[in-house]
Image (cartoon, rainbow, N blue to C red; front, side, top):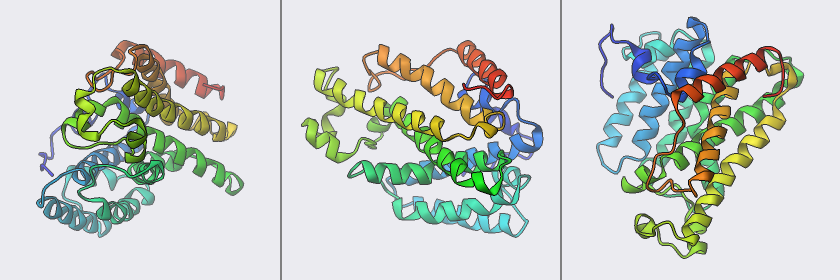
Length: 284
């Protein structure tokens, strides 16, 4: 909830050079990139509050409620809401609905089962879903297909974040692996950091990785061919994530002890190649 100075470079804060979002958004024109960045920045702020295990979270959440109401009234104060306000009407109206769905989840530390995990991912991935819709130019007959694509990509985005940053989440007291799955593996959540790279833990991590990959594969099947050239932002994010997932496989799923990533040079190549194919309306 830190107030940035008006002249502070918003882009360098939200998407540092070398990050996945940096390469995904860099080819967007300014009038589209700025509101997308604001929305993703708000996403990080609010999702971070959901997992905050402190009573002060309600004060912070209340502050954002008031700020979003100010944005709806055309009087945003925060750099993020000012950025969002430059976008299409959906950018301005959607965040308040998103907050209403996040509020009951404040203080969340684990999911009971896969369904609860997926429901959270739908809510948490709303900014990417909104970006996908606003970058689309689709006839009414194709709306259901883009809705399904946006839903699966946004779910996969959150699942991937949980997987890549699993060790950090667990050290912070957050366990994004469904309780039912840990129960079946006989590894208590409290022992995840002490489990070592045993075959049982590897099996659990493999299942988490496969879930992300399956969700991404499902999304690709639902993208209308006519929208490939419009959706290079989502396609770039998912293509980079697929490359990192391969590295996670090669590491024997050692995400508990390591933050596994690929180099900025590889991300830049993937982003350029994805953009090139998307502009040719080719499968990526």
